[in-house]
Length: 517
Image (cartoon, rainbow, N blue to C red; front, side, top):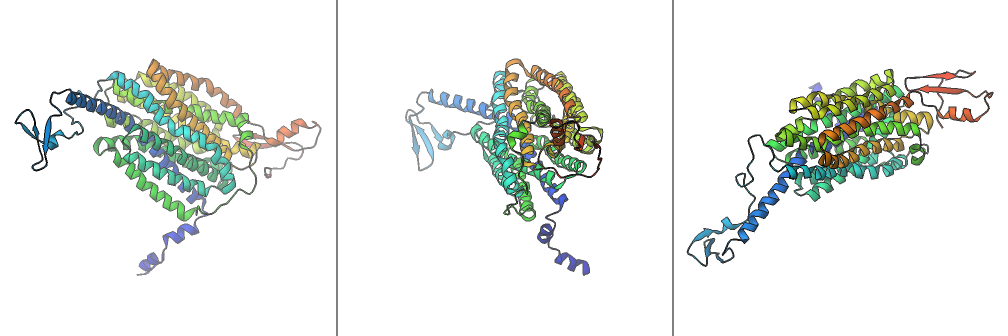
């Protein structure tokens, strides 16, 4: 009975409120938010190309049936009997049920014949889908790109809790719209709305982690775990969406995500208490000043070009598989499974390891591997041939993200004021530029010169960009820049920072940490 009494006295809501200041609980909330955001981001990857193709095909069949009915003599010379619900032709004694004349969606037998491998027949129409799918996928990142510069400074003024909760609300509405939208316009609107919610969740979430994990090594480990939520969403999304779409329907996966989003919203409501406004104690560095910092720009460029590769693959790889491999619906999502699994592995391994080996080196190797892997993708002849290159792409992007996300916060500590909303807005802008330019440009390039050339171009771009990460090996601190402007004989103590460690120079070698002003 003692255990039963203890269970009755346990109040979950009270416990959550008492643990509100726990760093681990904040990390869990950000983990779940990124998980749901990226599940919604990737669950549409196998669904949208096939769904839009079927919508266009259905529209053509319906239009052809309507034209054939209008061209039939005597089609409008009929009398409807309200008594027995029959139709009598005025020129003959034939009678038909009125329900037979009600337009209905074509059955499988009425659709154009497909072969046993589900290979689409209309290749030209399939190529045209590249642009439509690419623009729809890019709409989310484009809206997020526009929203991020406003969310970053906003978090400095009102805190991180309220933007995260607003992001959940918008994400929930977007998920419901995806579930019940049946036109390209509504799907485009739902995808764009998701960009606003994602901007609130990701910028505020990363900023909150950077503010509660002040130690550089701990911060890298925490952000690695949070990126594991992102990786898990990317991992589960495509196969989950393709299997549910194949065997249950389009609506089911989005309703399940909406239910999970409600759980995350309830957790945020009790733990973060988003009604409170908690501004930062000090004024952060202006966003424009951070954007002029060359080291922050290099880190942001690594995030952008690293993720642009997978962003270009998302709308174009399923269509290329439908065209060349005659892939089934469930295979369109499963093809991304190796990349998702390896990304999850990469973010968890290098969240801690990157700090020891040097984050600049981790990012340099990662971008090189991304470039080589995407060049190898078009050589696959079947879905099994995609396993190794896709695994390499995911693992390498995990190396880049898990090293560059912590270094953004580190650069702010080192060279600016330790307020993190704006710098993670820049990081998210870089991420979104990859996912905005990737699908939109990638769809057009794939339609013009083909999918293999698209992969070759982005692979070469990544390989060329990789050496720039050398500049992140030992970025100068703010104090060093001031010392350079002063007389060389001054007694000012200077520091030399490295992304692999920290040591001090000068006459007074004091190992204590100073506050960054």
